[in-house]
Length: 147
Image (cartoon, rainbow, N blue to C red):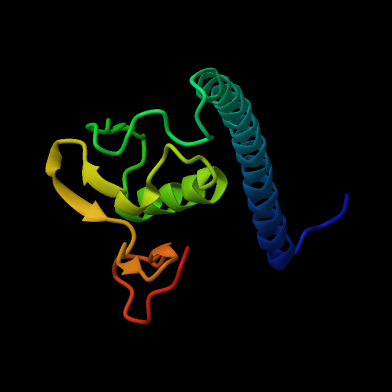
């Protein structure tokens, strides 16, 4: 029977912890990739329907509702518990959905579930000459940049 030294036991325990963490992260990544693919498919279907509707109405690939009409706001609750995590999710959504003309990410705000009247702006959102709005974080202390 082989005798284990204390440093080997600690290293083995540590490696087991690392292996467990790696397995959990791999599962989380697989889940995130699956969710992302579902979102991509849903968006493709939505864009196809919106494009067909726009073509049917004889208009360009722009939002069907004129700018003079009231706009609808989509409130999308999450299971996140930290504002930094919600901001990171918002930034990821803008990264992957920024090409969807019907979504105005520049006006994105975050609020706690039970304090929805207190909102935290995600982006600086300063209007830039000819390039839209600033895409840097709201608390940025540098020069504004296009998204």
